Length: 408
Image (cartoon, rainbow, N blue to C red; front, side, top):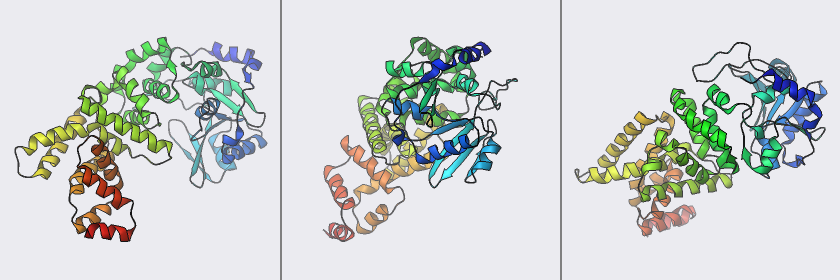
């Protein structure tokens, strides 16, 4: 745990932590600024904190904003009727403006009594000051507090310097911080991939040592963190780091030990994922996992097809075997299994151009994901070019043109 001397040192040299780095406030949500104005007008401290400020400083457009304040959840809730208090481990407030959700948290402090919860992290439901809150954060580049009213940044751990040098450094003793929550190792890999930052050598060694501890983390929490690595818009960079740190071997062996064709297919899928995120299009995690495991399914399907007259039976059996094998290594959540299975099972239907079957497939809830998956397979020469061309014309046509295509 970090010493109180760190907090005392921060307070003793307080002025040196003001930074005049330019922040383009046009990139900040007006609703975020309104929340901060309301909190400050009611004599509370309030700052934009973490990833949003980091991203603006390195010329990225922030996707969401977090606010930190000394106001308690009940006080925040009283000021904002369009809000609700959530969380048991540490209570937060979500404020809603239509579809925009803004998270407001109260400054945290080191708890007097340490308690490890079932999800593998330490209970820390204790309020504190801004300085204590900064000590609790994970990486130096995420411990930046911006006051839009004064247009100043509080930088307690040389986070701005690390941003300039493109280094990822952990606050405090890396060994201790990773032991507190091993999932921070995955977060480090994710930030490194997203930001293109070099992980500090000492931190890198500690990450390698703590990876076996991830087995003690509940699958539900771990699964979400693993998926985030590939859903930041930098999936290709993430793929390399995941292999470098042997995460693939632990969670998705296909990503590391597959053939050249498997790796090629996965990389194409990751590239398409990045492109969709860049264009602001939604990504279904089930689609991404379907890409990871498809070649396993395909190889099994081809082998089983030699023993049966029914191709669909071979496909379904291959899917079942692949998922059972994967679930023994790293279980996949049921909602994603449904998506994956439907994407795979729809693939043979693209080859049947019967009028009724075409429109039935086109109306299927998973059609778009299955269609994109079919196009991806086409790039690997798994699907006939004429079939691909026909479907592209069909999808991009009007209703009348589609009827003509079917007739012809």
